[in-house]
Length: 164
Image (cartoon, rainbow, N blue to C red):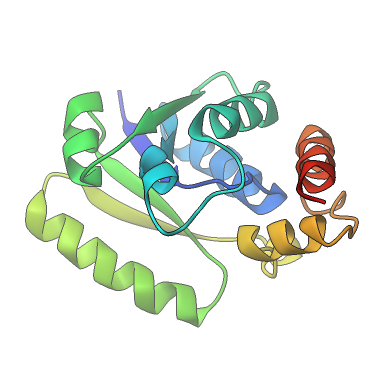
């Protein structure tokens, strides 16, 4: 069985994330959406807790039978080893993403050469979507309904209302 991890903070999961996950699920027997819960303790200050992000991602991908959502912390390649993954999926929107991701791929390969990084270009319809931008727009009262799944849009409105 080929297993891939699509890791990230997913704060929140976007239509771009969903697109990459579904496309990865066509290439691998099992795709694990790895919610990095280190963000809860870092300077990144996610809007949603790791538990909330797991629920939002699970609901967004409930229709995909070979995608599961999990939490992880620590080194990604160690997590990959624990879950038996052969690949790490990374979505690319632009050249600037590639530059960062290439460095991460080299470090991960140095740490564990049994795990390959697979880059998937984000569909052009989602190439401008960035979770940080979506959070900012939502917190300022903007409509992000076309950028995230409907349940995520509702959750963002609720968080925005709580922050006001």
